[in-house]
Length: 69
Image 1 (cartoon, helix red, strand yellow):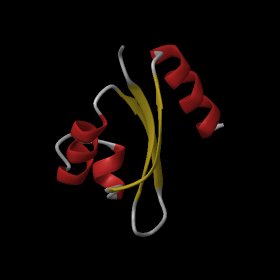
Image 2 (cartoon, one colour):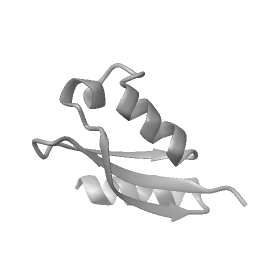
Image 3 (cartoon, one colour):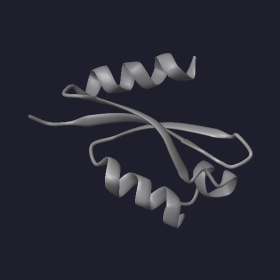
Image 4 (cartoon, helix red, strand yellow):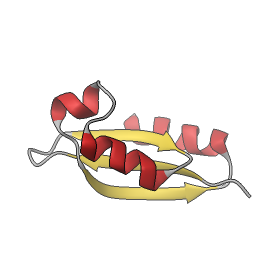
């Protein structure tokens, strides 16, 4: 069974980043290492503060949209 994660990363100043991944450990490492240029590296969202696991990628994407709205 595949696993998908909706996760929220935070900066020390309180900026939040919400995303979806199929490899939470790798994705958190990428955020913390600033390996991918963009929002998370610009705003230093390096702390994992929340995640949910699901077996359906569409469910994960829908949940991400729900959290962001």
